[in-house]
Each structure stands twice: as C-alpha cells, then as structure tokens.
Length: 338
Image (cartoon, rainbow, N blue to C red; front, side, top):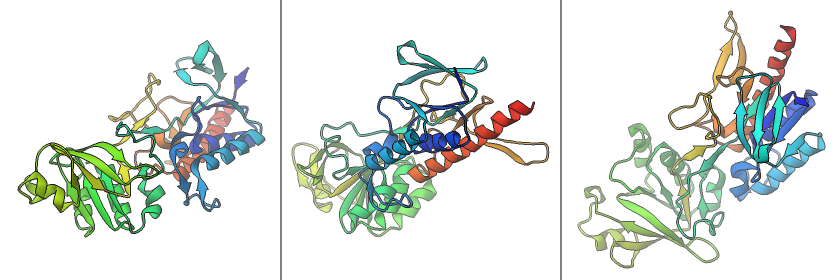
C-alpha cells in the first residue's frame, strides 16, 4: 500500500499536519517514534495554547493524539531510520526493517533540548528546572532564578524571565558571550539581571523542588568587580563549599545551551550549520507563493522545530504543521494535473 502522505514526528506540528491531511481525505500515516510527543512531554503547565486554559504538556499531547486517532489516522509508534528520496514514490525505513511507501512526506521530528547532564537534573525537571522561559516564566513571579548559557537563546530567555522574576543571574562558563552584542546589551539594561562568568553548573540542588545550584567557578573574571573567590560567593549571596565550588540559592533555573534538531537520520537533505532542516519557498513565474514548507527534495515538506530556529513554541509548530499539510495537498494535486 502507498500512502498519500507519511508524517514523520509526533509533536504539535505532526499532529496538526495529520489532522489537516486526514480531513483532506488523504491516506495518512504518522511515524510517531517510541518516545512520542516531543518537548511538550517535558513541560509542566502550559498556559499559552489557545482554548486550553492551564493544562499539563503531556495532557495536551494526549488530547492532540486522541483527536488524530478519532479521525482515523494510522499511527506507528516506531522510529524512522532512513528516508529513501531518490526514487518515487518515497520510502521510509522504520526499525526492524519495516518499510512504508508514500507519495509525499512531512518531516516534523522536532528538536531536543541540550540539557546540562548533571546528576539531579532529570529528577528536578518541571520542579524548578526548565528549558523554556516563555512557557514557565509565570511560575517564577517574584522569585530568584538563573539562566545558564551564553548564546542568543540564553539572552532571549533572560529577557523573558527578567520581566517576572525578582533576580536573574545569567551563568556562563566563559568570560565572553557567544550571543550577538545587541542581544547582550538588551539584557544588560535589565536592572534585575546580573552576570556570572567562568562558572559551570555542577549539579542542581533540592528535594521536592529546586532550591539552589552547585557551581564551580574556575577563575574570577575582572568583570565581576571582586578580588577573591570568597568575595564573589558573598556578592551573589551564595554558600562556599570546598575548593572552587559553591551553592547559589535559586528557585528556578532555565537551561539555554541550545537545541539539537532531529535530523541525523536524514541523508541528502539540506541543513544549516547547526543541523536544522532548511526550508525553501517556491514561487511561480509571477511571484506567487506555491509552497512555503518544502525541503530541497520536491514532494517532501517540513514543519515545526526541526526547521524553526527562532520561535520554537507549541503554537507556532502547530501553525507550521497546518501550512505543511496545505502544501502537501496542493503538491499532490499539482502532480495529478501534470
């Protein structure tokens, strides 16, 4: 059997694409993976998805999946290992050697958060440890928090959380930020943001919820304005432990060291320098937009965080899923008319 469309992924982008494709009466299959759902599975309360009020991320995903299943979309909880795009119709190789065939494909495999990898991080995720300020900032209103990172993402997170938190400390393992200078300046003007250089997070501290960060400061940056390690710890209200390690009291920490797009299994697809799938707009001879979400392979489209390097929200992923489905419908119709 050949499907009209194969959707690879299972987050908001993939779910929305599946809903639209099924309503277009396209024979649709979703390759969801064994750990389906994407980053929303690691999110606690979601308050910014229209119509949902306050809802836990996993619960929102379950509602999306129930909607997709109710419409009759076939879902395969298996990993996609390879996409054969040099022959048509396309083939997607799944685990255990299973292969499915489709006339078109939507790649919506998302991106995974790069976590710190410290001992208690996973245990305290959703209990003070977060990776999304726009998602979770509300829960830290009036509380002291930290942001870990030195790139544009860290600066964006710091700007968002600074609007609600009482005190924000941006922790970077180096003496210079990788972020654009303009981004850094926007954060510097925030009166409740301070910078902590040459410092890495060794662990997160807390029983039921986060209470602090175990830090290691390798050297004192001249930018800190202090002469000794003891002075540094005292200036941030911390508690010295042993050697160069100390504990910084915090109610929350936002990990902003980047995302890793799930594109490693894709061969022959155009990606940018960070591995994000490239999107190519196609227009006709009059300049009218034909396809907004196409990849470099005709008939294969993309949606969500696997290509989105800027917005990275559940609602924007869903919007991209809608656009990809509309592009697929048009592309399949164009092939029938040729």
